Image 1 (cartoon, rainbow, N blue to C red):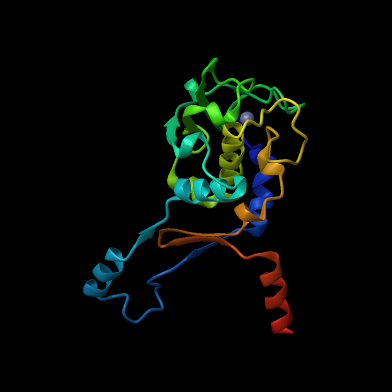
Image 2 (cartoon, rainbow, N blue to C red):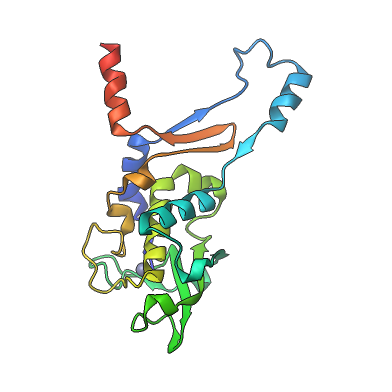
Length: 208
Ligand SMILES: [Zn+2]
């Protein structure tokens, strides 16, 4: 389970590093006025799949697919979400932004059974916290880290006892995970991307 990001504290960090650019036709483009060109460009609009992007990174992070290779990702509502923040001191009273459910031979959602026995693994994305694909794109590092966290449950890692600033902790968005911090996602004419820190340094050096 993942408690929702505290928007007031996490958003400024994200905004400081994230770049949202408009790509494609602009007013300065001499071809932009052509209807045919516009149609051509519309046909080329690309929409990334942030769930697939996050799942791919989760599998890479944990070194394979849990639950015999079968994990479903579904959307859920605020009203269905379990309480969050039980294991993240000072931040109770929220519902989970994402949560996991699974079946074990001894019952549902147990960590006392070996992870190799888990089946019917489902990650639930709370649409009350993540309302749209574009929201997932624009705050992808947090979305991705939450996905890694839920996959961690399928690997047998509980929230209880997890150390702060790890992906297993109930605030995985606080963890440093380069795998989730490098991305390039398209939402139609919008590009959501973050340059790795090394690239930013190189750009600065070249400009000198
Ligand atoms: Zn959790």
